[in-house]
Image (cartoon, rainbow, N blue to C red):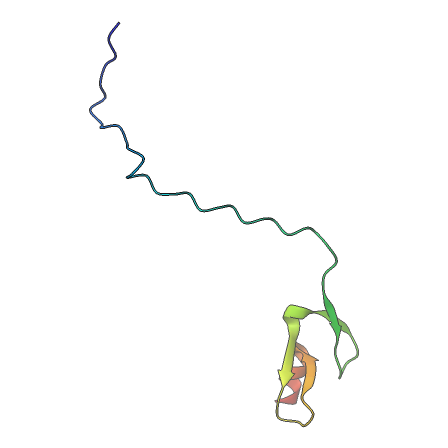
Length: 69
């Protein structure tokens, strides 16, 4: 038996791009939350803002940061 050629040249290992290693998945753990200094509600880290107009600096949620502007 003879193999039929598809017309494409076989890839050599030198021309192949190395695969990027897969990033390890983060375990589903508890979400980090902080207490807003103004409204006293627990909010996730992504919703917290620093208000640097005051001394000491206030750590507040996005809702309170908008009200303090």
